Length: 127
Image (cartoon, rainbow, N blue to C red; front, side, top):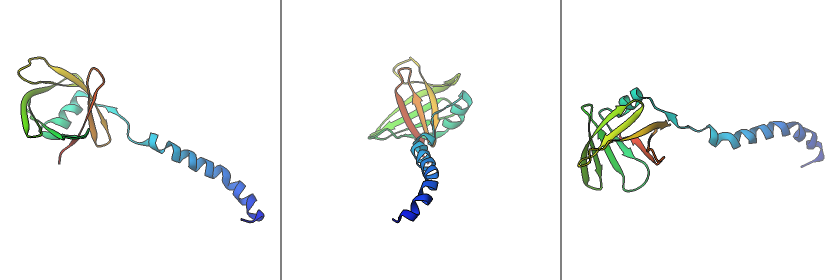
């Protein structure tokens, strides 16, 4: 590089610094958790299969409009009930009669059920 290029490079320095700052912020610009309303939860889940995205073995769950839900994992299936209460997804799985409710958020193409304890259960629409 010749010394004659130094003035040109010094003029570019602010532009290069701005570009590198924007690149450093790029991960923060990715999708963020968007809380879902009860209506959004109902519309997202009703009559759809969702597949877990948090590792193996994968599981799938179907949410029927009549409130029945089917869960399948590693060849085992179970049948429960689901409903939306306020802005939460709630379910019960026999033989228990207790209902557990979860907040739901959307993050890009992923939907995340969040338990009272803060545990996250990510899923995607199974096409």
